Length: 150
Image 1 (tube, rainbow, N blue to C red):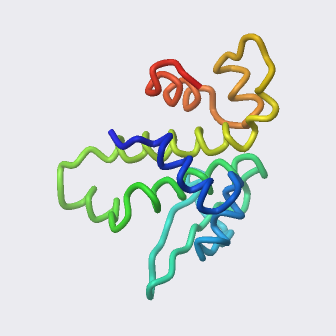
Image 2 (image 1 turned 90 degrees about the horizontal axis):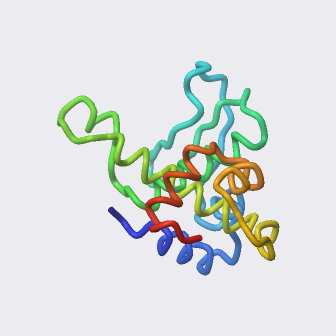
């Protein structure tokens, strides 16, 4: 598996922040909000050498931030991969890419909210999920992949 924490630290250093929207601006990734089916939170489109993240306009602010961070994970970790093409034409396990993008989003948002976590004696994945506004299962997966280290 890709060293996701290292990738997150590199993009934070490169862009000078851990805010997904600001990172998109610095990488010239446009964020669009559209009326999408309820089951679709967002996706990434590359067209004419431009990259777009398309978000469901009905999502909450927190869900838009997480989805943006997740899609940034796809852009930075899985460059040139078209999941629709892979899903239709190969037996490649797409869930691995989704899990990696979730972990990327989790670490990016944990760094973004790290100041709220520092100084605590005991930080649980439940604390991380609440503070960073990420699904607890995603925080648990990211945490377990790191060997239990923040």
